[in-house]
Length: 381
Ligand SMILES: [Zn+2]
Image (cartoon, rainbow, N blue to C red):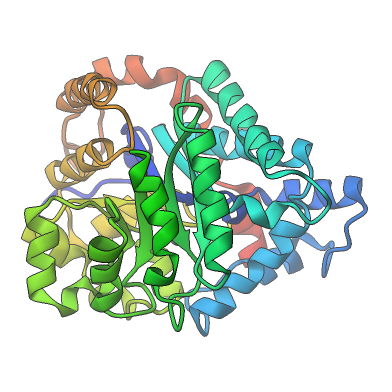
């Protein structure tokens, strides 16, 4: 029986978060503050009430219901100042749990309601992330999303933005939104444009729809990674293809339970995926709607599946390997992270410990970690 690891222990490990939506990862206080300053009317200004509207619960009725909470967050994300602040705060929250590299994603066309130009929407978020890198040292990449339920043309606009901002902070293209009745192949032209320009791409697939959706994302759209991929388990042949080609899965366990992509922890295939040797990365999806952090997601897997410290280290390494980062830069970072993880020792006598070398190395980033979103716990009960 592997020794039990605490959430605090996992918070101290270096990590990545490769699947994290900007409009799903705001601080509750920030929404209230921005609404006050912008004169935006929220459904409620009561903290607890607002959290209840945004938090998707242990299970929500469907993915489409889950997506409704975004109407609220998007209402305060229509100015450059708000976007810059939200991006910085997200990177800061990730840094507090020792995330060393974060890929933030969002759909710029959802932020033009009050007249912002698409380039302003991208630049504002990059400013926030750049400041976080300068002040805190966290590395980042920005992924721009097309939305399945929107037109193919809108995805092409997002692809063009990816090209314009390539090597300027944008590292990839994604297709997000409701899978049912909105096949990825309708957005094939956007993917082609991105690939023709040698830009990375990923796609949400196999979350609300079966393995065909994953096959389409890989074979028709050229996705280099798969967002979720939960239902890959239903097609052994495709599963082997994904494994053989080391196509990373951006798994977001708690989010999948909320949207019913999986039925409870025992019904979630992530433990099987890890056991089978797939390249699994663990991510948050929406830190606010799911009330989570990447440390919490790993910890929940540890609790539910008994993942050992060595398995957790492998998953952390898989996260860094799967980053949309230039190869040489990634190799340097991997060497650094591997050396650091090698100093982490398993807890003795039920008391988690980190080797002194690691403590001194990560002291700065983890110092403020003991503040787990004060808002959310208080609000939930
Ligand atoms: Zn997502």
